[in-house]
Amino acid sequence: MEIYFFYVLSGLIVLLILFGIFFHLLRKKVGDCSLEWADGYLQNEPIEFLYNNQAVIKFAIPVKSTGKQQCLVIDMVGRIQPEGDKFTQVENSVKIYSKGNKRGDDYWEAVPVKPGNTLIVAGEIRLKTGEESIEKVLKNFKHIYIDIYYKYYCRSLMEYHRKVIKIDLLKALGMPVVTEEECVTVDEGKPVLPIRTPLLTPHNDIYEVYEKYVKKHQKPGDVLAICESALAIMEGRAYYVEDIKPGFLATHLNLLFKMDSSLSSPYSLEMAIREVGTPKILFAFLMGILGRIIGRAGDFYLFAGRAVATIDDCTGTLPPFDKYVVMGPRDPKKTAEEFKQKTGLDLTVVDVNDLGKVDVLALTDPSARERVIAGLKSNPQGNANEQTPIALIRKEAGG
Image 1 (cartoon, rainbow, N blue to C red):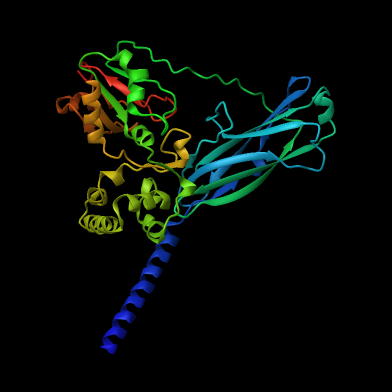
Image 2 (cartoon, rainbow, N blue to C red):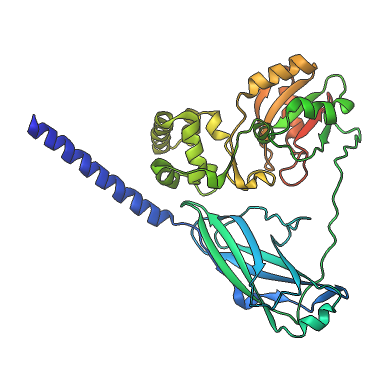
């Protein structure tokens, strides 16, 4: 009996060692993400003086993704280095954003950067004095040093870094004007009417949205389409990435997914494990590997279930939920049926992308399926900042 136990224990130890070696080699082969700042390409031009006591300095610097995996850049914030009493008479603020994705506030939108691609990090430094001339004050300065704090991840857990930028005060760019659109939907008589709403959060519910933004546009025979991520967010199924603590399986099995998969992230995979349980995930992995051996793809998601397939990692959803792992809706079929009973309007819950893929998660009128797919194939709701998470599909859609 003791010998039997010894052999079993020895076998388990050997398996664990082989398991560790396998994932060590796999991690080395798969690699991870990294960012490299191109300091020699810092761009800035003469300072723009807005008023006698205000000035704006703008700069841009390329940051290259140099690793084997894409970087999910979750946040970047900046501040002027406090050099003694240098800025005691000058109010200052620093705004950091990715070029081409500037917002009207100080929020950094999480962004993925694929291997070999370059992210242009832009910044604005705003300076303001009391009654004293800002130009006169700045003549005493030669440079401004900016601390940029940023974080990113891909296969491994979050990495935190700081970058120091040196700004020549003789250069800067102008500050563009930012305007905000009101949430107004104009019915142009098209077969699909995207409906603009404020940012939907866990404080909203689908019935409130219907009453405020949909009901006045509703026509007989319409089907209301809502994207699955918006519904899940209203259900409170969005989790801030830094509040998720991935376990051993999530930080190792994520290496087996392709780079573009949401589950290549340990955070999303951890939420998948919590959603359906460890046994189901391990079984789905086994079936997925067997499927690959015989040349068939997609078996993992087939056995893991739709709840796993609909998980969005960071950057997959409209800010501020671009820094959240967003699960799929809790029970889209039940939600759709209850909505139809209460409002009389057919509802479909969909997952649509810019590649023409329309995945219907729920639909109260099965006969309208082809109309829904045809109407949404061009993704009229959009996947960016359109803020049109819902749309009315008319009878003539796809006809």
